[in-house]
Length: 420
Image (cartoon, rainbow, N blue to C red; front, side, top):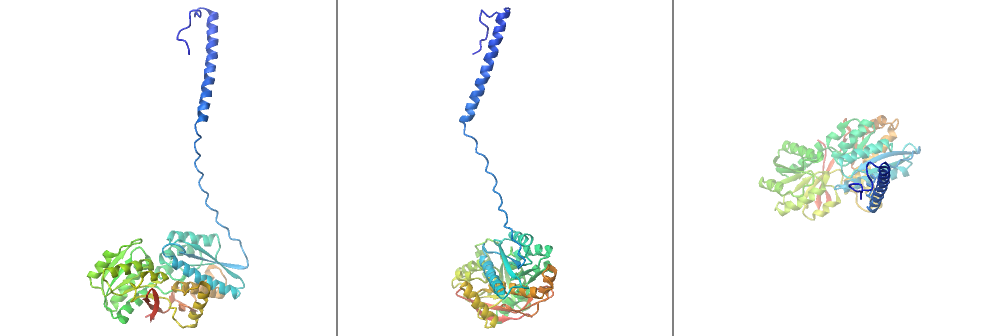
């Protein structure tokens, strides 16, 4: 330690003693500084080193498609996963079957077709990402998709802005093709589908008092509900209750109870199969044995999950597997051989969309966006599995619709409804 006062033999007035004192103090200070530094280093080494923050994961680099002058690329975006995955899988299967057939026959303009499909997970924003990637990175000449109108309304503006034709197999909301001249479809639209359901209820089932239960968050569901109500009233029917739900809802008892109180003879449910199964079960538990009627969003093998609760219920669709036209019989045989099951309407529409696109490629002056879109829009009397397809002035397909009856989860042909 340092002394507070110098000892008696080190007097301030003694020059030699003072010099000696300063020297000793300097040496002591240097030694103390060295000791302090050493202790600090030891303390630092004895503490565990702080863990370095993990480096952010690098986004996977998108796979770059190699250019091949002997192939023509087309894209497809679909819900291969998510709540409506059966829609996307069936459609993709139909498209793949059409591509394989066309390639076996020599392709288009002497080149093979290469199909690139991306999963949008059933989300509109992922649809934007998928379509952008198909056009900007993969350099496709045309896009097929989507099934759901909300997702087509997300992807269509990208195609329109970038000048790449898009053909939707089954988006029935009228606004889809209103996006612009690059957008077409091979399915009928909801004003006609709403009329089909209303006409069947009034004239085939002789019902006059109906109710609706629709998804307010879906462009498809809310739009089709409005179309049905308008048509049913024109045909002399009365809509006694209009009830709504939102995405993710599982309990429909309040809406069903309200409908029951109004004495509806049937319920029009323009939703997807995932919702219809739950609604049917809950309606029967509430003692409601009235028919349920819906649109093409019901079309899925998952209807079997409803057991017998959907027996005596009906939905409009684009084709029936019981149709005996050669186009239908041949398609079903090929599809069953490839996938081991009877194709639903979504598979048939995917197949028709791809084949109609190839037909337009054959007729187009070139595969530029403008020329190809014009050839698609000029399609007349194309012999599709889902009917004879002719494009109207808004690039919508004009054709018949069928009504199917659900029997233990299996759709059976009931009637054909023609455009007015």
